[in-house]
Picture 1 (cartoon, rainbow, N blue to C red):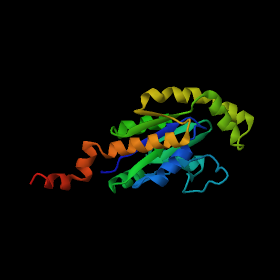
Picture 2 (picture 1 turned 45 degrees about the vertical axis):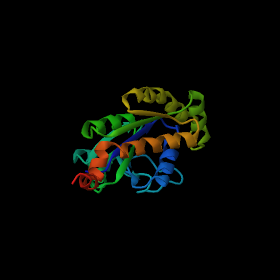
Picture 3 (picture 1 turned 60 degrees about the vertical axis):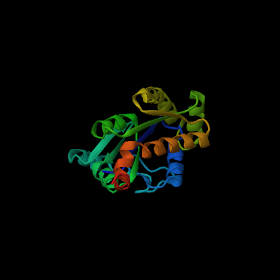
Picture 4 (picture 1 turned 135 degrees about the vertical axis):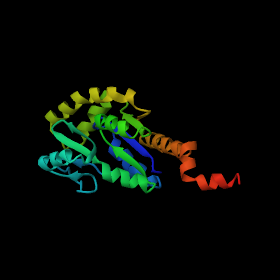
Length: 203
């Protein structure tokens, strides 16, 4: 497999989805693996684009069939990434982003030891609360529930390779672009992707 796997994780409301969307729009040969979830679509979300929306029974059947590279229950919903989707993209030489929670990230790291793990943090708790409230999509009860779980999620940052603070959007985006570019320029990656060119230099 010549593609590189990048795992991007953040607490809800940190701006991860917006950053990943812009990262995909500004970076060649990079795609996101669309996860399965049992939660209901939010306004503006489409099946097969943002998530593969499915039922709990169908999700559990996929678990029984060992279809998932990783899966987790987050609050009251299940999320999972299929092995087939990721491996196919990597085999084709495409760099892949997994936009998943920290539990799933650690599961994937066990199977893909060279995966690059990136954690996005908010600049403060107040900023996180403001972003969650500003969505206007969730009730106060749901917001408080997410805030209560956010601290536990954010404490997992020390298990990741890189940390990006999303205070200024443009700066956070540039940080993500730099991480990806640096790995594309690593010796190991260059030998895989440009091995023939390098070998020809020494003939």
